[in-house]
Length: 106
Image (cartoon, rainbow, N blue to C red; front, side, top):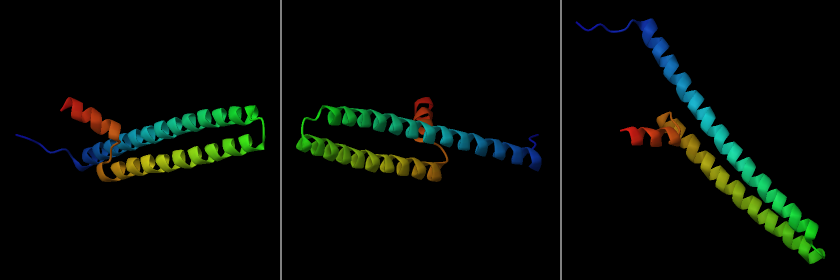
């Protein structure tokens, strides 16, 4: 004879699942933000070095333009990545990394 869990047990199991999904989502968000910060810091360092070695005003302007173009590109790409992450989380409740792991196990 099969017994169904009582309502308190079901509620606790649902809360545990929700907490796990939230923790995974936060970890995915933090990893993405950390990756982006590392990318931008490296790009900013390279730009700063280019500005420091510029010999004239046109060289400085060129360095600033390259930095602005790269920053705009990086921020746009990051916005796309974060949008995909949020969309995936809202539709499935898990991060893409968790979904990939589940596919490997299945």
